[in-house]
Length: 73
Image 1 (cartoon, one colour):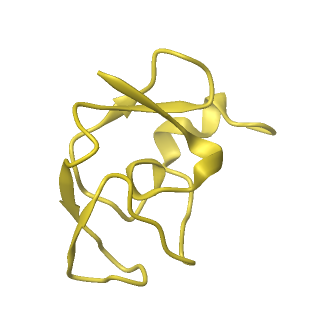
Image 2: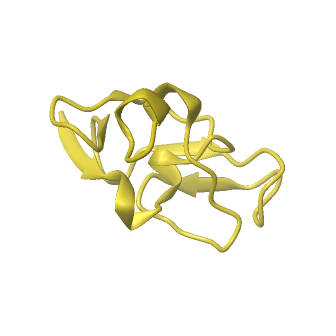
């Protein structure tokens, strides 16, 4: 499992991304199996498109599962 920092604001930590993930083993991270994992974007800048876990866009919103570990959460 790879841990990706949520401050990078990548798809894996975005509420709009529907790919496989879990809260990371370390604080402020999201766990993904591979950087090439894909998931459907729902309602973001790439709405309806398959996006890789490491992709980014200007419509990022923190995945609610991570709010409890995020700064200010």
